Image (cartoon, rainbow, N blue to C red):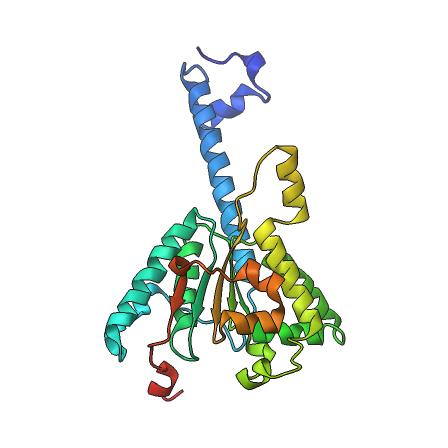
Length: 279
């Protein structure tokens, strides 16, 4: 049934001038379909902009790094079989994280490819609409220190903290590097990383695992049980889990570092590519 003049919010002549047949019996259906398409496009654009905004808050130690799974070359490693296994496992975990609730840990010596594969995971998740964030823990510790002297650093840290709390997937790169040498961490009387860094990371870990206070309140009001971890985290580290506990505390590490072997990638048998490449 065609729409009557009384049903239009504006003068039908405007539609006629635009070449729209207001007597078309399917006009209302077409308009509703068009409105739905525009609504969906708006939501896609909004999600894309949010994803980009979160990614732009990433904190790098020495500039942004781009790495994808196609850049992982197992045959160029001294242990190609182990490299293929790690690449496959990282890819599978990435796919699981698209609709999952899990944390991932990549551990091993420096330069063996942990950050590269972690970034490949982030890029896959990002291209599947996930809000992802890269944070170098070394750069984070520096930013925490600088906030007391520079107002702009404090403001950046506040914005970064909000993103770290709630982004879909957070990559904490080189966790433990700000805690000192292995000898220092293992020594008697060791008191851990800076107290302000410890406090910050516990707050982030708790909000990511349990959900923020606002998220928990909203879930309670709707009688919904949040699946933990509420927000997923990828960790790369040169330290053992016990060493990380000494650096940041049990409460923080228990929320960030999974002990599920299916979600852990050991790089123990991998060669140092930075030495190989003369870096």
